[in-house]
Image 1 (spheres, rainbow, N blue to C red):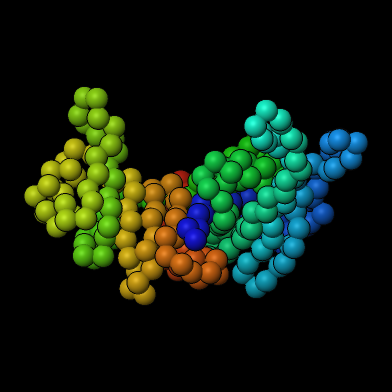
Image 2 (image 1 turned 45 degrees about the horizontal axis):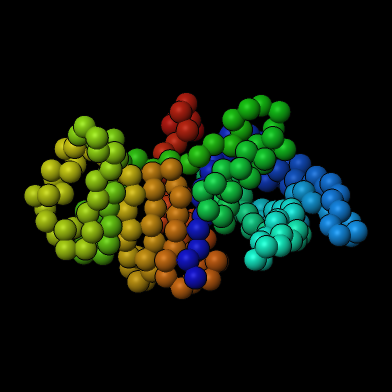
Length: 234
């Protein structure tokens, strides 16, 4: 099963104890009625655990969905769980959400509203074009896909290289002159295939457990992220 994550950085607060105190017992719950039955909808933080350099938990979102069966429509209560982890590396705090981009962005915004009175307290983590370029060039044989954006050709937004095209050094160099690397899919030394974008959307295509995927993100992706503006010297 493919695992999807997105990595954010917490500007403030950068103390796991404070983050835990703000998130503990968070629950924004409403009631809805379905066929005479009252159900709870909303979002809550569950399974919160504070460790040495991690704060882990789960966002539980409940809502009512409508499904069609032939000419009939049925309303069904659904709950979706999204595991999350705050991870401390040096003097930086990262938020890793096990979710696709849209849900991850929404939940990161929710976290920012809960933990800080200031806007923009949780921001996207970023990798540079140079970092993705170095990741490819250090192991071109292990790279499966490269996407380029910011392409300076009329009517073309992205360029891509797949499979045997990646061995074409001339074509790769030409694409580098036309755009910047946005996304690569590559194989780690352990044989795990992952995809990563400049804004730290990480997709693990190999069959691994979530903890293994998180360890890859902690050790292979987060150390390569760009420092926040003004914190280069911290």
